[in-house]
Structure formats: structure tokens, C-alpha cells
Image (cartoon, rainbow, N blue to C red; front, side):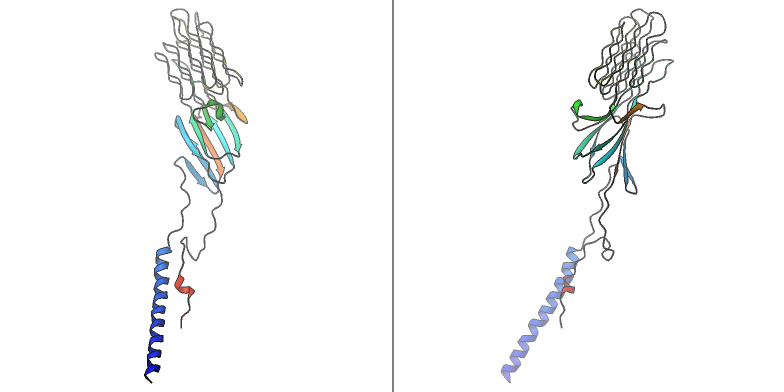
Length: 310
């Protein structure tokens, strides 16, 4: 009888230990592995989402970065260029607009939002991203272009460009700056400086003559000229910049307006008076994978349920 009792006793104890061990593994493993499901990637501060459409608006002058989400193949881009700087008794010229659909891109795009040209003083500063400076003594600065590019330091990598407007010539009769794609006007009173030419798809605008305005170049407006009287307005930035307006060759005369730069896009035009320099990118977000409602967003594994013990 003694051998039978010993065998029965030793066979029950391991079973009880196994049952306890498996149950513990099930509870502990479940507690250790269950964790909140991965949250959807947070959108950048410039972006909002309505349904499956994400809209990102950049409206602060300067350089920004846009990282193309994985799996997104198509981007709709709308850009608005900066305004030209004004002087007394004049209005600011208008920047350009450019709309394009971009496909097949990956990685990071660089968004440059143009700055408005400064009001003429001792020569208004040009706006960020290619606006030409106004000539000394009241020439308004040219507006900077807004663009999207693949290399922040390479103007040849620009994909969409909305040009800036030209700055107004100095003096009470200074010539108006040209809207994007249009030349600046000559001064209107007395001996006057000539308006700067508009940038085109192939070349910068000519500098205003008379008065020594500088020609526009790839990506940059020309500087307004200064001779004796009031200075010329700076040219607007763009694919090619507008020419700077000529300064007045005689004391008391008025400077010519800077020319507007040229734009690049599927559809281009001139902004309205209420528009501000900006770049807007719109894309369709990918659908999120379905979530198991029984798990409510967590990975739930209970190894204890995999064993049936008697």
C-alpha cells in the first residue's frame, strides 16, 4: 500500500503547480502585453482634417517644411505671392497666384512663403524670397515669391511659384508697382524714372530707364534705382524677377515702379486685394485600418484562455 500512496501523492502535486503556473502566466502575460493601440499620427500645427481631406496652410513669411505622408501620391498646391511695398498716396501692387497638382513625390518639400515689400522710406526692403529693394529715398520694396521646392537652397528645384508684385516708385507721383506678371509704371510728375519690366517665363524684367533700375534675375527682383530724386520701386520675386524701377534723375522728381515677377503653375493669375501671401497644400488622407471593437484599441492577449485544465 505504501508504494501506491507515494505514487498518487507525487502525481497530484505537479498538476496543481502546473495549473497555478499556467494561470499565472495567462494573467501576467495579459497584463504585460496589453497596451493602448498606436494613435493616429498627429497632424502638424498648420494642418486640419475634415473627413478624409487634410488642408495645410502656411501663411507666415519664411521657410517651412512639409513631410509627405507615406502612401500619399497627390498634392494640390495653391500659392499666393507677396505684395509690393507702397509709398505715399499709392496702393500696394498685388502678388500672383499659382495652382498645381503634384504627383509621385516622396520625402520633404520646402515651402517658402513670400514676404510683402516694405513701405518706402530710405529705400524699402524687399520681401522674403526674392523681393528687390526699393531705391534710396522712398522707393517701395518688391514683394517676395511664394513657392514649393524640393531643395531649400536651389531655385531650380521649384515646382510651384506665385510671383511677388513690384514696389511703388518714390515721391508723391511715383509710378505704381506692377502686379505679378506686369510691368511697373513710369513716375507721373516732372522728370521721372522709368518703370521696371515684368519678369517672364524665360528672363528677368528690364531695369527702369531712365534712372538706373536693376534687371530682374532668376528668382529675384531687381533693385530700384537712385540718381538724384526719389528712388524707384524694387522688382517682385518669381520664377524670374521683375526689374527695379528707375530713380528720378532730377531733384524733386518721382521714381518708377518695379515690375512684377513671373509665376509657374498649372493655372496662374493675380491675387485679389484681400489675399495674403501663403501656400496651401491639400491631400486625401489614407484610411485608418479597422479596429477590433472587442479590444477597443488595445492589443489584448490572454494566454490563460489557451489552456483548458481539469
